[in-house]
Length: 162
Image 1 (tube, rainbow, N blue to C red):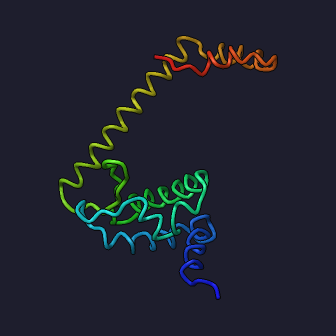
Image 2 (image 1 turned 120 degrees about the vertical axis):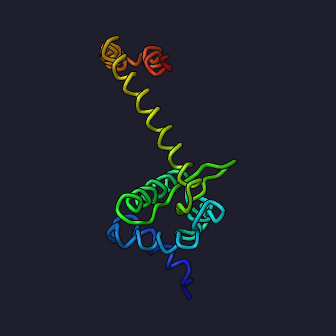
């Protein structure tokens, strides 16, 4: 006899992977999130995963990362296209999901957005630096030397820049 709960979890994975459209999957996520209104009622990332797919330990790291990427794209869709504003907040050692309820919840998201904007501005500056310092020359050189198996040059290219 096949476990009905397991069949449902396997179906959720198929749905998330594109066999169903994003609206269908969004409805499932909104149904879950209807029980997690406000920061005080947040659900952990692990419990979201467990709800839809079973224990994370049943998947390798690549599978977990892939599934999370898809699920987060659904959460983004919900945030953009519906009146259900779900956020993900990092607390202690886990991430928590909840629907915004009050201004303090909104402030958490606003701070996250400000941090992302600041990060994007840093990347804009880095792009300008890449052009002004002609980083592409190092990439071309690395490509030539990589063909000769010069690991030292590749290592130099992948070192962090300031």
